[in-house]
Image (tube, rainbow, N blue to C red; front, top):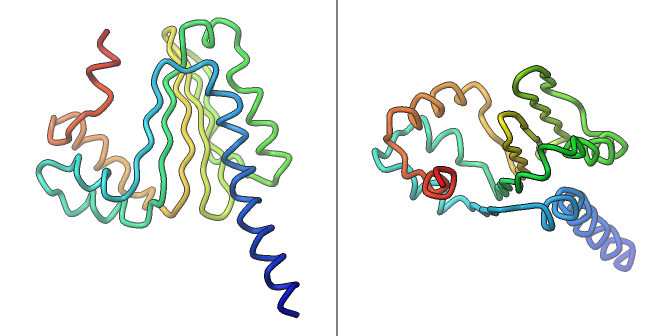
Length: 157
Protein backbone atom coordinates (compact mmCIF):
# COMPACT_ATOMS: atom_id res chain seq x y z
CA UNK A 1 0.00 0.00 0.00
CA UNK A 2 2.77 2.43 0.91
CA UNK A 3 4.59 1.74 -2.38
CA UNK A 4 1.39 2.36 -4.31
CA UNK A 5 0.91 5.69 -2.58
CA UNK A 6 4.49 6.73 -3.35
CA UNK A 7 4.03 5.70 -6.99
CA UNK A 8 0.83 7.73 -7.26
CA UNK A 9 2.50 10.81 -5.79
CA UNK A 10 5.42 10.46 -8.21
CA UNK A 11 3.12 9.99 -11.19
CA UNK A 12 1.11 13.04 -10.18
CA UNK A 13 4.30 15.09 -9.80
CA UNK A 14 5.68 14.04 -13.15
CA UNK A 15 2.36 14.49 -14.93
CA UNK A 16 2.33 18.17 -13.95
CA UNK A 17 5.89 18.54 -15.16
CA UNK A 18 5.17 16.92 -18.51
CA UNK A 19 2.18 19.19 -19.08
CA UNK A 20 4.28 22.28 -18.46
CA UNK A 21 7.07 20.85 -20.59
CA UNK A 22 4.95 20.91 -23.76
CA UNK A 23 4.92 24.70 -23.89
CA UNK A 24 8.53 24.89 -22.70
CA UNK A 25 9.68 22.54 -25.46
CA UNK A 26 7.96 24.73 -28.02
CA UNK A 27 8.91 28.14 -26.66
CA UNK A 28 12.43 27.90 -25.27
CA UNK A 29 14.16 27.94 -28.67
CA UNK A 30 11.83 30.55 -30.16
CA UNK A 31 11.56 33.10 -27.40
CA UNK A 32 12.89 36.62 -27.11
CA UNK A 33 11.60 37.06 -23.55
CA UNK A 34 10.64 34.62 -20.81
CA UNK A 35 9.05 35.75 -17.55
CA UNK A 36 8.23 33.41 -14.69
CA UNK A 37 5.94 34.87 -12.03
CA UNK A 38 5.03 33.41 -8.67
CA UNK A 39 2.44 34.71 -6.13
CA UNK A 40 4.90 37.02 -4.38
CA UNK A 41 5.96 38.61 -7.68
CA UNK A 42 2.38 39.01 -8.82
CA UNK A 43 1.52 40.80 -5.58
CA UNK A 44 4.61 43.01 -5.91
CA UNK A 45 3.62 44.44 -9.31
CA UNK A 46 0.35 45.72 -7.81
CA UNK A 47 1.68 49.21 -7.00
CA UNK A 48 -1.70 50.61 -5.90
CA UNK A 49 -2.43 47.50 -3.80
CA UNK A 50 -5.72 46.93 -5.62
CA UNK A 51 -7.69 44.29 -3.65
CA UNK A 52 -9.41 43.02 -6.82
CA UNK A 53 -6.02 42.21 -8.31
CA UNK A 54 -4.90 40.44 -5.15
CA UNK A 55 -8.11 38.42 -5.15
CA UNK A 56 -7.63 37.47 -8.80
CA UNK A 57 -4.04 36.22 -8.43
CA UNK A 58 -4.30 34.88 -4.89
CA UNK A 59 -4.47 31.23 -5.99
CA UNK A 60 -1.99 31.43 -8.89
CA UNK A 61 0.93 29.10 -8.22
CA UNK A 62 3.02 29.87 -11.31
CA UNK A 63 2.71 31.92 -14.47
CA UNK A 64 5.12 31.54 -17.39
CA UNK A 65 4.97 34.11 -20.18
CA UNK A 66 6.92 33.75 -23.41
CA UNK A 67 7.26 36.50 -25.98
CA UNK A 68 8.39 34.79 -29.16
CA UNK A 69 10.93 35.90 -31.71
CA UNK A 70 9.72 37.47 -34.96
CA UNK A 71 10.19 34.25 -36.96
CA UNK A 72 7.56 32.45 -34.90
CA UNK A 73 4.72 34.67 -36.11
CA UNK A 74 5.63 34.22 -39.75
CA UNK A 75 5.68 30.41 -39.79
CA UNK A 76 2.23 29.93 -38.19
CA UNK A 77 3.54 26.97 -36.14
CA UNK A 78 2.76 28.73 -32.90
CA UNK A 79 -0.53 26.87 -32.44
CA UNK A 80 0.79 23.36 -33.21
CA UNK A 81 1.64 22.56 -29.58
CA UNK A 82 -1.94 23.23 -28.49
CA UNK A 83 -2.91 19.91 -30.12
CA UNK A 84 -0.67 18.13 -27.58
CA UNK A 85 -2.65 19.76 -24.77
CA UNK A 86 -5.95 18.81 -26.41
CA UNK A 87 -4.74 15.19 -26.56
CA UNK A 88 -4.21 15.38 -22.77
CA UNK A 89 -7.83 16.42 -22.27
CA UNK A 90 -7.45 20.21 -22.10
CA UNK A 91 -10.63 21.97 -23.12
CA UNK A 92 -10.81 24.96 -25.38
CA UNK A 93 -12.02 28.03 -23.47
CA UNK A 94 -11.34 30.68 -26.10
CA UNK A 95 -10.53 30.48 -29.79
CA UNK A 96 -10.47 33.63 -31.91
CA UNK A 97 -9.06 34.17 -35.36
CA UNK A 98 -8.67 37.35 -37.30
CA UNK A 99 -6.22 40.21 -37.04
CA UNK A 100 -5.20 38.71 -33.69
CA UNK A 101 -5.41 34.97 -33.04
CA UNK A 102 -6.04 33.76 -29.50
CA UNK A 103 -6.34 30.26 -28.06
CA UNK A 104 -6.79 29.44 -24.37
CA UNK A 105 -7.06 25.84 -23.16
CA UNK A 106 -7.55 24.56 -19.64
CA UNK A 107 -7.83 21.46 -17.52
CA UNK A 108 -8.52 21.48 -13.80
CA UNK A 109 -6.25 24.27 -12.54
CA UNK A 110 -3.85 24.51 -15.47
CA UNK A 111 -4.23 26.88 -18.39
CA UNK A 112 -2.21 27.46 -21.54
CA UNK A 113 -2.66 29.98 -24.25
CA UNK A 114 -1.15 31.63 -27.27
CA UNK A 115 -1.90 34.89 -29.01
CA UNK A 116 -0.45 36.03 -32.30
CA UNK A 117 -0.86 39.06 -34.48
CA UNK A 118 0.91 42.19 -35.69
CA UNK A 119 4.19 40.27 -35.97
CA UNK A 120 4.26 39.28 -32.29
CA UNK A 121 3.42 36.00 -30.59
CA UNK A 122 2.96 35.48 -26.86
CA UNK A 123 2.32 32.20 -25.08
CA UNK A 124 1.60 31.44 -21.44
CA UNK A 125 1.27 28.61 -18.95
CA UNK A 126 -0.61 29.17 -15.70
CA UNK A 127 -0.89 26.71 -12.81
CA UNK A 128 -3.43 27.50 -10.12
CA UNK A 129 -6.86 29.00 -9.92
CA UNK A 130 -7.66 32.38 -11.38
CA UNK A 131 -10.80 34.44 -10.96
CA UNK A 132 -11.66 34.90 -14.63
CA UNK A 133 -14.46 37.33 -13.83
CA UNK A 134 -11.79 39.70 -12.47
CA UNK A 135 -9.76 39.81 -15.73
CA UNK A 136 -11.58 42.90 -17.14
CA UNK A 137 -10.69 44.75 -13.93
CA UNK A 138 -7.10 43.59 -14.26
CA UNK A 139 -6.90 44.88 -17.85
CA UNK A 140 -8.34 48.20 -16.74
CA UNK A 141 -5.77 48.40 -13.94
CA UNK A 142 -2.88 47.66 -16.32
CA UNK A 143 -4.12 50.25 -18.81
CA UNK A 144 -4.35 52.88 -16.07
CA UNK A 145 -0.65 52.44 -15.26
CA UNK A 146 -1.32 51.26 -11.72
CA UNK A 147 0.78 48.12 -12.23
CA UNK A 148 4.50 47.74 -12.50
CA UNK A 149 4.85 46.54 -16.09
CA UNK A 150 7.70 44.06 -16.07
CA UNK A 151 7.49 43.41 -19.78
CA UNK A 152 6.96 46.94 -21.09
CA UNK A 153 10.63 47.90 -21.42
CA UNK A 154 11.30 44.81 -23.52
CA UNK A 155 8.14 45.10 -25.60
CA UNK A 156 8.85 48.71 -26.57
CA UNK A 157 12.14 47.94 -28.25
